[in-house]
Image (cartoon, rainbow, N blue to C red; front, side, top):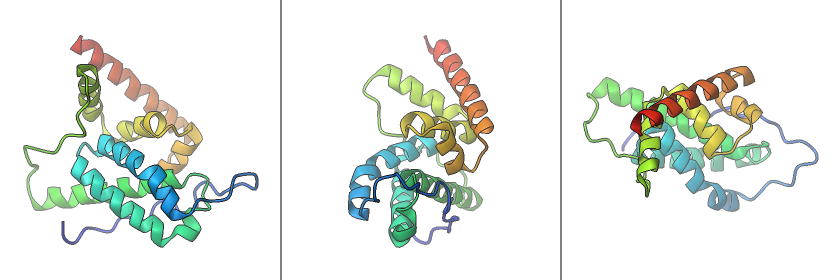
Length: 177
């Protein structure tokens, strides 16, 4: 997509590795193990699979460039997710400044069942702040502390956004029935 805006590198010093954690993976193994999951999480968070793919690629490239430092983090996947989210957010801001929103955004990968489609639609209606917390906690399976570190929030804010977001999802899904 041509020249893309630079996003902050992310929470570079978040979650330093403790002494009893296993040795870090080589980047190639990390990439194979995490790229699809991070892409799915970003697709749900930003609501556009094409932008999520570019954000994932950009974030993985930045992780590769900083791998000596990133691999020492307790949660390098969380760091990559945050970098991708920052990149996508910057990209959307630039697009909104340059042109009006497109009518036919690329939807996230289609769910195989109507309940999955309803859940995805309800998730896309949430504010980005709540949606990213839900994606981190549910899809990426991060703890409250990890989510707080990745999104640069307090744990209380994570719990609050998760609670409110899940309540809004339940209400939206109850209306669908």
